[in-house]
Image (cartoon, rainbow, N blue to C red):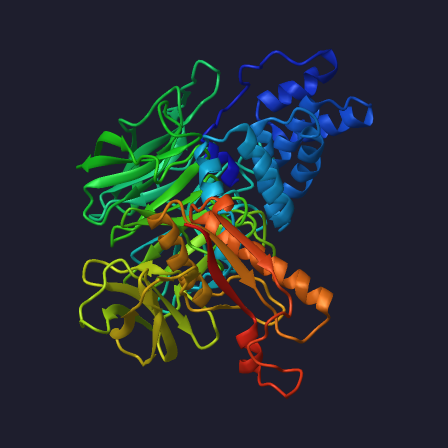
Length: 622
């Protein structure tokens, strides 16, 4: 059901039908143009049985499944649709469908095809900027626990919002309503239920008054003074439908007044439009602004998020939230929290699959990670910073029906802000522009930062950890310092760096770069040294360097030679990612040659073996 709302393309009756591809597909195409996707899918499946297997049929069949979140069948048909002359949006939906099955490697490959067709698309640009985004999201620390509710049904239940002691949500459970052609579920109504002090949700009932009709009513919010409810409805007002030129009836935001425990005097708002959909209202804590989603012309893509002024129940001056929040995909289901954080769902920003929940705070959009997000659709997030509790909706496995409402509760995390300061050991002065990092006892390192004008950088880490801070800069010997953090708000550590000549004769004086046993990846401590090398090569643009990598004496000679070649390639790739041309940095593997400690004639410790697993640098051209 959320597909219906995110697209904001609702209609009642028969829409204008595009020219059918041919007489053989006319029936299926008509159902497809009418957004009757369940029936359209059946019609296209029959065409396949009859041997009519064109790209157009496969694409529309894939779309028919995709719009109802049947990603498995969508995936099957998109795979056939993109075999020849693939279309960009089909590739994008195919990649999304693959993520729903957690086929992330194949999804990655398909996204690369999408990028090749639409390299300037904001979704392509974000993908290229964060190629490892799946792993980054999966490694995020879980911030919430989740709870399922017994009030969910086999029908769609979604977009729950608690106002006072009442929980409001949208549902297709009312069997007295007609069936909607899109997904064959009853039309939506708004329900309410009482929430007791223990958080137990009572029996849901239809809200009282004039809001619900025989057609769709959905997501809503109430002004802080309790006077007005703003809600989403198909353009159905006083028994009349408002249809656009294309024959469809769009979604609009309506307003109702609180009167004697009921919601009455339903009226249209200034956002109402015959030609494009508007929905999903969310009101700020002070009642002066309203956020919503719209497919209005001039936006970034499918549906965009907007903000407008709100004064005594009247909406004015809507403003698009811009390209940081909005994408070429669909951005919808806004919720503006009391602390000003904007939560919303999107399939345009990088996510785990389907719709993911994101938050927008301090000018930055961040994926909420698991368990709020999954490989399927996650949306309709609402949350109270004061209580640490909220709700979201998902069609993930294990629920009662297509979409279910889940509760979330914040996990209280103990964190410390650790300031790392780089100091010149001779002068005692702070060192701006140094590269510093912070690593825990398990070897997990946070991304390095560059120190500011005061020689400092701030990292946020868990409490009760033993940490190692490292620092490096061109013309300095790298340094490190250890510290232990307890349950305190802030901590500081100073890393002392000793000035040294970086270039002596034809050698570049860096701390040796070490590798883990049988590994070729660049460790965090090695990255700091390579950052110094990169800074040096950028400072002297004609400098050319040879990196020689070595293994310890364990393992076969042939294996160690291949392993050191892999390590050499890792060094080149890292430098290239920082802007160094590969022609200026050569790297070669030396296998077991020149061990630092002769471990063939004595029993070596792990630390002694590690001394030989290194890289050394020399100048080949000044």
